[in-house]
Figure 1 (spheres, rainbow, N blue to C red):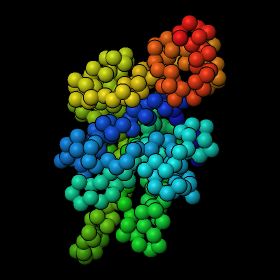
Figure 2 (cartoon, helix red, strand yellow):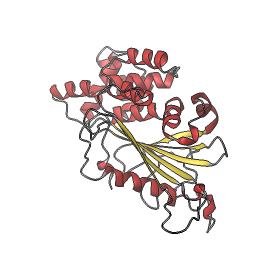
Figure 3 (cartoon, rainbow, N blue to C red):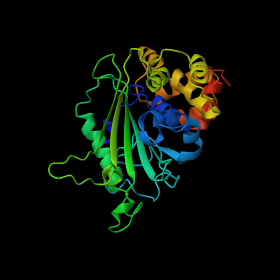
Figure 4 (cartoon, rainbow, N blue to C red):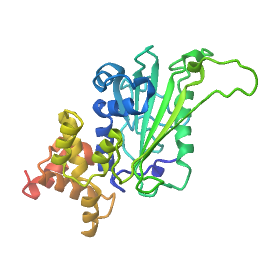
Length: 317
């Protein structure tokens, strides 16, 4: 699988893609997902999940999926890897990867969250099989990192959670989980569940219709709602009790200013997607919105000098 097979959140807009994944990787957002999706955290407050049980800093687009690359560089959660999260890398990366500790027994859980944003819910292959492959890679890559030699008792449980911005049911949302279960074909012997309950694939399909599920509505607000950044910030703080950090505010600003609507309007003006000219036009739009220069550097991958030149030339700085 090559990097080109990943679908960008913003159509073909890597800047929007990057901002969205950075926003989603914040512990405040991850706590909502864990509490709703992961049974080990069902009875734990989101604040405790955020502050006590998510370990280290989640890695965004920096850990390769492919064989012999997933466990390069030692620990995958403690920031040892410093690869650029460019979408032009020669292999596919997990979108967001992090560790958490199960509240009851302290067992390590490895989690990945992948975002599939294509409008067509059929990307040309079975997304379920890709999800199982990703989870399997996280299991196999634990050898010589989480455990050594034949000490397979050290295998950590893996969750792979897929947020799909299009639903196979059209406008209807759905959350489905798939896991290993024991079936007695003969006799009554029962294995201890923690020994085989090591892999979980959850598919969360976000439809257009309003639901009664708080997590789905949170994701609809962030990714699908046609609202400006300030309105989304107010809704996140009032309806979801989410006190946004400065980073989250910047990333949400970037997402709203780089949304598909703005991007498509740029296309109507003759901007070629993915070209340098497109990045400069996006940078100019962000400068006109008074977004911080450092943030624009991070989202567009243009140098600070280029952005300052654009701003001076157009009277924005």
